[in-house]
Length: 110
Image 1 (cartoon, rainbow, N blue to C red):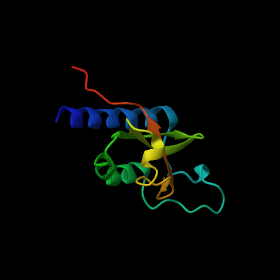
Image 2 (cartoon, one colour):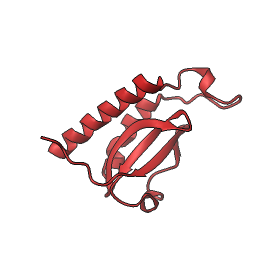
Image 3 (cartoon, rainbow, N blue to C red):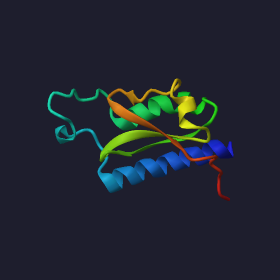
């Protein structure tokens, strides 16, 4: 229960920080290359729709919104090697890049 609460809190902090620092949104046409279709869902919706599924994968410690090459992406934090999760987690999802990052175990701070 404490782990789940800590992960939810980390997700909220990551999403808020990414939004405040980077102006993280795909709602602007200026973020896309010409001819690239607009995603049907916001990155926040895609993350919310998939986080529970990803968290059920052994080794996945958390999820968040981050930046990749200056554009919003979905980050998957893992305590295992990223190569071990490549078959279970796509490299892009609904037009957003998905980056798997080895961070080690997450622990709640009292």
